[in-house]
Image 1 (cartoon, helix red, strand yellow):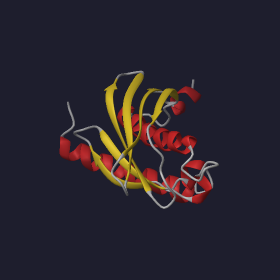
Image 2 (cartoon, helix red, strand yellow; image 1 turned 90 degrees about the horizontal axis):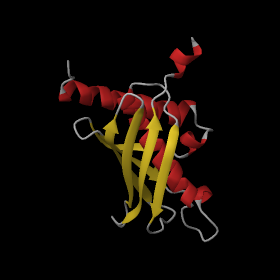
Image 3 (cartoon, helix red, strand yellow; image 1 turned 120 degrees about the horizontal axis):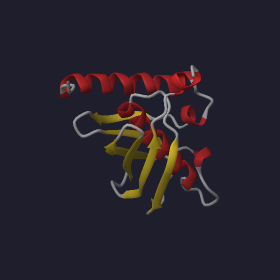
Length: 158
């Protein structure tokens, strides 16, 4: 039996809230917590989520713009969130993450990262994402990723 869009949307929103609380509060000293992701939007029907990442001074490269590794981290955070949700697993390791950098992001801006599931199989989930500057509305980077669906709780019991 397939889940209705309205019940799926409620489940997705609850998962977003729970995950952000866990990352931003309980794991505040980890890289995920330090990124301070915020919910912008989510759509069960589209299989997508958008998080906002405030750009802070500690995240910059030598020329004072958002470090490419931070863009990659924001992509990984956002995409992995969706991979876990749609796989129904508690851990989905990254198999590949391809990022194309287009333009810089300045300190004080908010980078909006939207991820979308393109294929959710039994063992592999494929996703795409893009980042835009909230201040300019311009595209910052794009990405594509593959995640493996692994339930570490079940595997530890074997």
